[in-house]
Image (spheres, rainbow, N blue to C red):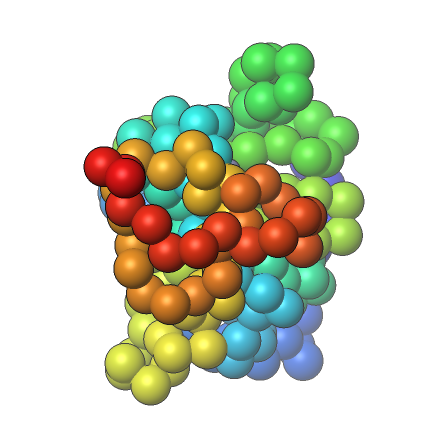
Length: 171
Ligand SMILES: [Zn+2]
Ligand SMILES: [Zn+2]
């Protein structure tokens, strides 16, 4: 198993600000940043299916700012969505991580970044949660519900084409 972030043992200078946990608690990790590089709601069909939810809330952080607690590696399962390949051992990123026991989605591991799911983070206050709020919606064209929150709504990837106007599904 890998010895680099987010799998490395917690270095002494790692300043943990938040803890995150799966539903059963076997998978836990620490976060060292107050806010992500970006956060989005993704409405694409893959996210709907993989999360069993109308859309996904994801936040991007550097891998070096995330650390699994010791022993967590053995409780992870991996899935490469591009080839639909599951595995119990860590493949080359990118891959999707879930808890082997409760099957909560844990994160998407990229080569240098992780896409975290802030729903797993234990925020000590509403104020701590604010910087993790999404800046935009992506793949809004594939949405199954309307979110009239005034945030930019991209039909596909962020900054690809023009944002969509606020509209309702019945229009
Ligand atoms: Zn679990
Ligand atoms: Zn998506």
